Length: 399
Image (cartoon, rainbow, N blue to C red; front, side, top):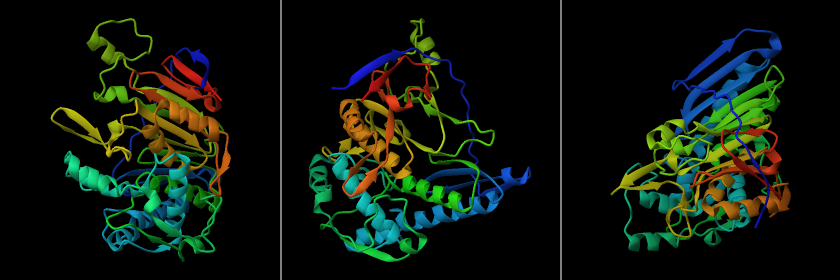
């Protein structure tokens, strides 16, 4: 088990709502040369992307960031029949471009790191549930059992090239990404899906772009995958709120936010809008939860985060997982994996690797967690003890 350092009483946090505008646009605001602002908002990877950056080259950086995300979307989307991933799934394998090569290698490492909780071969089961097409349906148990056997990364035959070994997934050059690298062979009927990594990988690519354009400060949200690049222009940290799934109406639990009102309707109205808020810079903040994408059939809620040990939506006792790390790819993958693992296993994973560690040829960056269970309890790991504030009485977990 893990050690609990302290129960932290609630803090009144200021709640700020950022509005995303669904249209391609570039705005350039004139200020001092080093603090020019450029923003771009557009739709890609099945979600809204919003990017704002500051600096002399802000407009050029924002445009380059959008081009890069569009390029990755065309490469990795399972909804695009012409994408590299769709071609691999259709042909049962093939040569990999630099980006896909990196993601395959990283996904296989993450599968081992999380004891299978993250698995890129989940695609056939996602397809069976209708999460890839929007035609949702609870599958027959026999069909699910037949398909579930394909969700096994150990069946994948991956051969890395001489240049495929990167200890840091964000280290590769643009030239590398445009070249063919390793090869992949799938078992018959298998398919891969980078839905739990692609936006995180795009996040790390944008950080590289902002470095290249000498951007002073930036904030971007790739469908909820948030990254705070350097500090704000006033040299203070960014304040990032974590959405509270209890406000979605999907969960019938009593929250623990020190409400003295016993009336059920009144308590619902007093549930905090956010689990809490983080003051951070140079960090990715990625949250996963079943309330984000789901369907209801016969009164039962079925969400999109599949536990590949059962073939059903994960039911681990967690309803929200937030991962904070300098690596967007790691944070993206771990947010999905920890949602499957549950509270105790997620904290054990953090205890083992949360301070940063070498694993499977990779330098796994440090990471922290904010977790909410289905009884409304909130846990935060000690690395963010000073930067996390909440209206909840929450638990700080020591290593």
